[in-house]
Image (cartoon, rainbow, N blue to C red):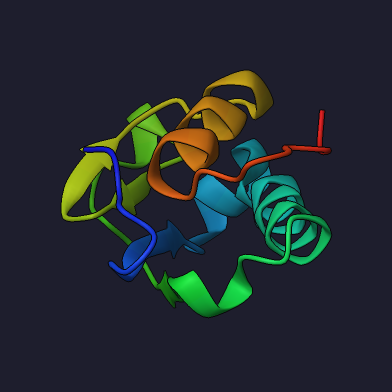
Amino acid sequence: MSAKYDELASITVCMGSSCFARGNGDNLEVIEQYLAENNVRARVELTGSRCEGLCAEGPNLIVNGRPFQKVDRGMLLDLLREVCPTTESTYE
């Protein structure tokens, strides 16, 4: 799933009420901050969706077409580092 610098990564954040309440509101902030602090915003297509239909498994994300459930901060940062690598990741 690793992305090259010339490839545009795709991240879809489920913003349905269950996923939002389970943590995707915070996850969205983490994503936006990571992209800004690492100057990689132009390499990511970040979108939101209303509901992925997996509410009990949330918070849900889709990264490069692959679904991820129960995404917490640690998992999210690992995913971001994989799909949007930087030479010097400053965000922890």
